[in-house]
Image 1 (cartoon, rainbow, N blue to C red):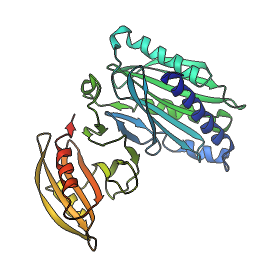
Image 2 (tube, rainbow, N blue to C red):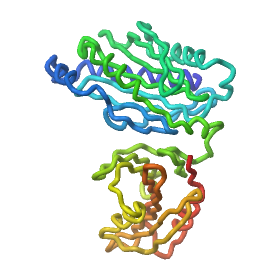
Image 3 (spheres, one colour):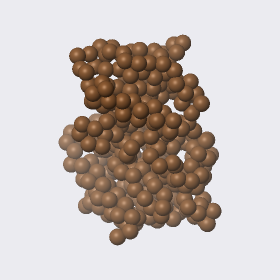
Image 4 (tube, rainbow, N blue to C red):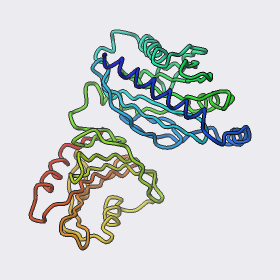
Length: 345
């Protein structure tokens, strides 16, 4: 089975599970949707990868990074069981190997055919649109996954040689017209950073993963996690190869209170109930940054290596957490080597 076939099969199983969950979710009533329809239809916008900002009720789960025709894509999913909606997205991380071989419209229609095949769907409505200045097309389709008539609404965007999708799934017998209203309201709000396409003229450097407008040197594919911080919108990626090994984390924080030196203020706050071992100034991709090495009070082995810097409207933080002997300097060496690999887009 080809990578494309595997990804389509996995996508179909995923949607089947999501729709089945939506059908049998308890407590759904007409009153609930009347209340939901009276509020705002706009969903929060999340910067998921390579500068692609998509609408989800909360930050979605990164399911997998798969390869199709030599280009990697990240797959995201979130199921809102309370409201009986499923949300999925795929973001192409690398440009197509020969994007000029077809027009943007042909790439989009080819992708829509693949989506319909993956969900065993029948197109009901298709329409060309412009999304943040880019060619796009959406399709409403009925899905042959369950006995109920489930609908998938999929938007396909051609982004300078990359193809992204954002989709909603629901059961109209439960949700009525709300699914179409939410979809049409939110596709107008999708944003793609203007420099994102230019920064992906070829595959990204090995071992670098996108967080906001920076590329971080995780040793493996990181996982998006929820991190709650007062007065800030936070995006976080984390990776740990095995239990007891180093834990790597990247943070992008926006909306922080205005202070003279955000990096210093953030790191100083992280020292609460910690012992400061070392701190100072360092350069990240030509930009000034602050770093510190701290250790848990009462523990000789639990260390955190952190660097923070401001870029654009965000504060970025790169951490390595590891238990090790105070005499072992290998993690310190790894930390400073990793700073040389961080890139800014």
